[in-house]
Length: 161
Image 1 (cartoon, rainbow, N blue to C red):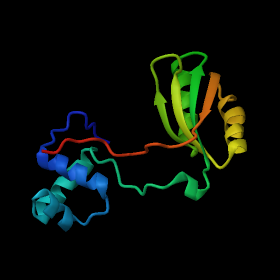
Image 2: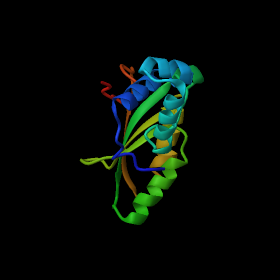
Image 3: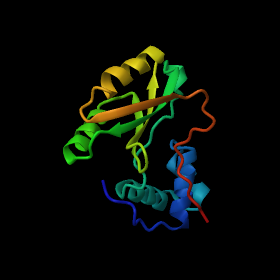
Image 4: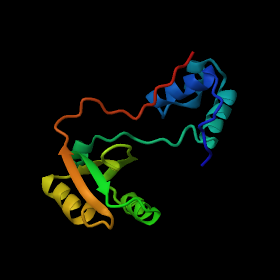
């Protein structure tokens, strides 16, 4: 995918992004009207935003509890060493784990921070004890169970003009 860190976005692009983040299923005609374009140039801009990687995709936002994931946890992981082999193997293992919603490489005391979902505490325990702690190179794992989600968003703030 293209590196979008240098993307040149004008005010119209930002309005398109802001609007699509509110409603990714909005028909192109409605989107065009909302951002002050006609359908063809609006569709072209959306396609360019997709092709450049600014828009990474479209997805339904699912409530974890309503599909049986009643437990969420924030998991901190410390590796024994930071060799390329250990880090790459760890990254590869995590990519295959569907219960890991997000993984962040961190600066600070811990090396990685995970957002994990599970159907129950037993499943979370199984994942932590039998998966994470047994991964080669993992030295320490700390889990904190989420009691309540106060805010959850996938929207990236953009400043349309």
